[in-house]
Amino acid sequence: MRNTRHLFGIIGMVILLLLLVPYAIDMISVMFTSKRFSVWEQLSLYQWLPVGFAIYMVLRRLAPKNALWLETYTHESIHAAMALLHGRQIKQFVAGEQGGCVYSAGRNRLGETAITLSPYCLPMYVYPLLVIRMVVNTESLWLPDILIGFALCLHVYCFVTQTNTDQPDIRCFPLVYSYLYIVCGLVMNFCIIWVAFFSQYNVFSSFWRMVCAVWGNLAGLFV
Image (cartoon, rainbow, N blue to C red; front, top):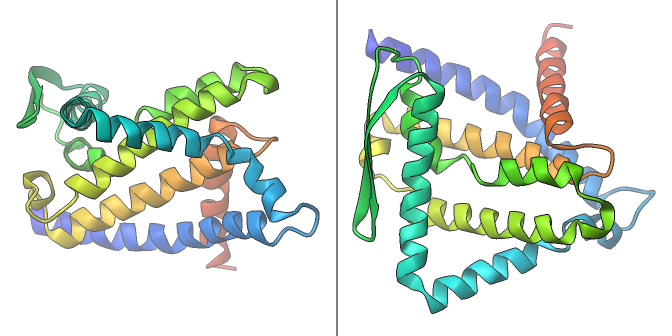
């Protein structure tokens, strides 16, 4: 039964990737092949993100133990947040330099995959910052954008250092299943965050645009 569920999950995620990737490519092409705007003019939308990246890398160099704690805390916080979203009760939360763990309890088993694997593909801190960005005036966007860059760098660093086959989380499921889930999550979040910076969109409308694009691509398979 469990193996069958994982097999159907793998098939579903492969289909989702086939629907998502064309959208991601289209969004990147809008940035680099637009006839109305230059590439540099388009990339100026993200001009403050590298500052946030640089600040995190400096922190990583000057205070590696603090940065390591923050990365561990972030990883465990995502486990905990997803557990709460799926109606589970947090029994224990531990985060330290040597690692961390979260124990939760509840009858809902439907969120097991999301609870276990989301720390490897969900930049959780970025989304509240994108919501804040929606209500900030144009002249002050540099501040939330720097914070978003900082949060993105944190999550990228977590992904690079924590995503491997030795991770018990990833080994909870068949490796193909785990890595497909992570890749799907990364592509989905990339699309949402990338489009959220477009002047006529925000985090909610970019999510809706992605959903509509995926639905359109799916409908196109049967036309």
